[in-house]
Amino acid sequence: MNGRGGRRNPYQLTDDSPVYVISVAAQLSGLHPQTLRQYDRLGLVSPDRAAGRGRRYSARDIELLRQVQELSQDEGINLAGIKRIIELENQVAALKSRVVELQQAVEGAAAAMQQREAQVHASYRRDLVPYEDVHPQSGALVVWRPKTQRHD
Image: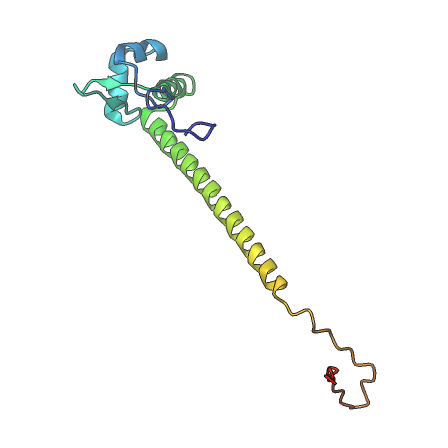
């Protein structure tokens, strides 16, 4: 869906669209194609596959390749550590998404509860009034009878 409420164009490219062959992805990420194949084998970056089984990388995959390279070269983290970092980041993203879903569900339930509460309050009888005992020690009983209308 797009922002105007219509259907999403199936030909529109997103960050997850697998469009880059391995040579282009290698060039865009600054890595050797063999490194990309190794990362795929290790499960660090798993691109989609085309009909002929060729790898197709998305813009998100290329960003992840750059992140793997940065963690490996600049931070000195081994590939097993990088894989665990990626797994944990994916888990955090999934949990954040779930929190948003649950917050929306809670807000919806609260709104429904408030609406139901308003309906209950609206249904109260308005002819009943609170009784205040003005002489608490008297023990007197007060009976109220509505005026009867005479039909002469």
